[in-house]
Length: 506
Image (cartoon, rainbow, N blue to C red):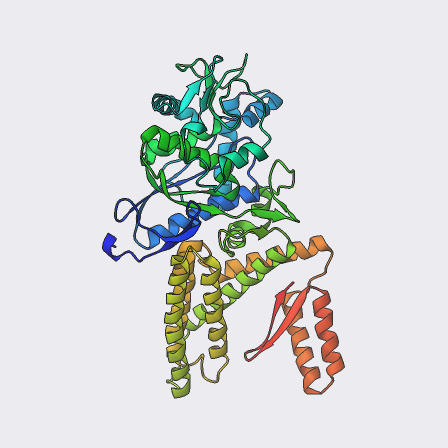
């Protein structure tokens, strides 16, 4: 697809606080940087959301025709890595290499597409030193007598523009450790002097040491994407100080602004009433979640809400995910069955109904396209899909609807929407229904087993539904209600509709 034909899209830019039309610096090409994890432990489910959101951005931009240069880093220089190395009586490099492998495994299970570059701090020390020297040369940084290099926020008047914070408010409200070598308590470290016997240290013009946290992303994005880039992504918790400091460093070094055209920040996962974070000790490891639910359930769980919205990590949201995927794959199974079955002579009324469905499917494709183009509104796109699935099920319930040839075209339209319009962006809905539904049933069985609920088999459920139908036909409504309540107590919710009675698990 040529650059001139790429549809207009909008992103919410944290820098402006507004939704903006996305216009890359080079027509048809996008430079995209996403902040990856610090590798000293297994990542938690909140970390995984960051990777999956970046994956969705990459998938979508590629799908609509952009040539995307996607870079996601690993932070392998950090106090936490040194602490872990000391605890495990090994080297810092062994720790970071181990957990990079573990993160890669989780990302693979989550179905993430490989970025074009996955740089690490330790392989970019020369670039970091060069960048720091450029900042010093621009008189935006200074060297203390101990060889620590600080960025001088007083010499960067726009400091605070991303987080919309005023320096004077930060100075009044933040608890900052007293450091007599700083000109301003808010000045931050670009280069940190090595401590005696410290593993991670390199020679520099200012003495042996290692880079501060924020400078690494500025150096890596500059090397792989240039001094100015189109998109930069990370969690909302990185807005300040990490991304704020990135802007200050990069623009001070290059003299060019803006460093980033559009900043994308995803919402946090909430555990109870608190943000999920390692520092609070309320994390749930991505590895455990992926083992329990698999990659597709995990992706749906993390992407079913708008990427900027917080996610409540709890039983209700997980159950909603399982129910939604079950609806998608049940519809896909029906559609595939119809496409494989020879049809009878056309039935005029049924043909007209499928004609209406075809028009609705085309409308749904437009709604999905508009939802994704409007700040990657995944929730809106999925809402359009479920409206179409309801229409599909209603159409199937009509007499002769499944026997008429037009049913094949309608079913093919639904499958294409599930696999391409949704599947190629969110990475869900592309499995065979047999496998997906079997996996979902196994997950539900395991969940019920752990909760102590004895869930009935599918055959038992069907028998109970028939018994309930017989009771209702005989006007024995008390018995029909007893059957329904018995199933509900065992984790099965019955749903009566035009096409008959279906069920889902709570």
